[in-house]
Length: 71
Figure 1 (cartoon, rainbow, N blue to C red):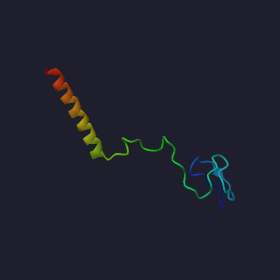
Figure 2: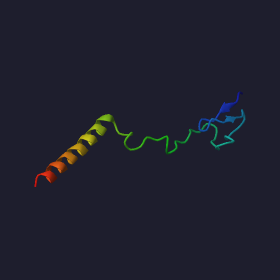
Figure 3: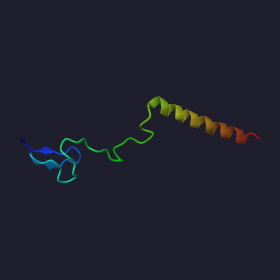
Figure 4: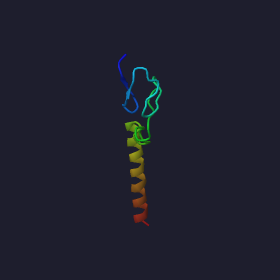
């Protein structure tokens, strides 16, 4: 059996290794997503929802400018 690499950290795991010697991931487990690998709340939204949020914020800013400049 050939050596394999750990899917989480990339270290070489021996053919009979049950755990990665570097990060401890058990052979056959899925890698853990770290905080920097996960999309933030903005990236997790679909494009149409992000567009709607931008339009809503722009409308509030324009309304605030209009009402504050016209007493």
